[in-house]
Amino acid sequence: MTLLSSASPRTQRLKKTLLALAVCGLAFPSVSNAQVVDSSADVTTARASTSRPALDEGTYLFGQSPEANQVGSAYAVFSVQNNNQIIGAFYHPHSSYDCFSGEVLSDQLAVNVIDSYDQTGHPYSVALRVEEALVAGAGAGAYTLEGFHRISEVSQGDYDMLAVCQADFSQ
Image (cartoon, rainbow, N blue to C red):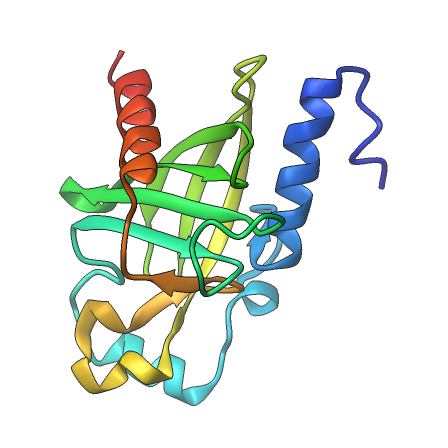
């Protein structure tokens, strides 16, 4: 596969970011759920036991690192709104970011990532999994993104990125 062979350095940057994210849970939509979603009985039982969406409405921050703002780690900040619609950004600290929009499905986030330079779209999906440490509270709060850690404190910079992406998608 020649994922990084594009001519534009800006396109190469997005593809490198998406490739790094693919390693930790993002997958092309053609990849079957069995390959990207933990199919253990606990996950199946937890999903079947609730009719609530996987993620409640609100703003979320997830990172490859359990700590925010760690250079070299990828992060996803997004807002879940009406009918499980999401808008957010993938980013690395001290770098540019790429906005995405999509929806929360029962076992994944299905998103279209927009290259911040050439405005081309790239469809991706991120598997949702049960976070065992959060199961005690049950419900939608027990989910996290595959390959990411949930970070409880969303920074002002995260909110600023999110606001730009929301404004872009509202046009």
